[in-house]
Image (cartoon, rainbow, N blue to C red; front, side, top):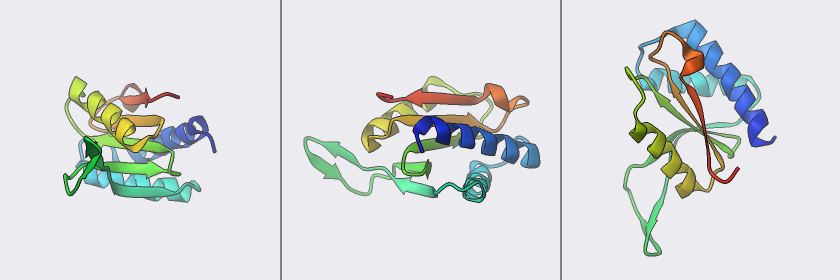
Amino acid sequence: MHENEISYLIRGAIFKVYNELGAGLLESVYEKAMAYQLIQDGCEAQSQVPVAAYYNGIKLEDIGFRADLIVNQKVLIEIKSVEALHDVHFKQVTTYLKLTGLKLGILVNFSTASIDKEIHRIVNRL
């Protein structure tokens, strides 16, 4: 599947999870629910995937960067449950895309009254 097809499935999973659970829970709840739903929808979903960083050609070990979900080894999902998204959240996804070499990231904030306005596509050379 191409990133855009995966993105469409992810968006559907977000709506299913949001409609079932509502807003304001912990990010970890949404992460588990999203992983479950994506697997039910026929995707491969990996949770808490370590993201390596390199400096001067040296791999920096055990630095704690983790992608919430990676779907079909092509699309990164960063899940938030915050009052409002800020620039730092978008920068985090952009950095994770660069570090992983993935082309598409989805940033979603589940702490909202209107989920459709809180799903953001972030691209890296797509």
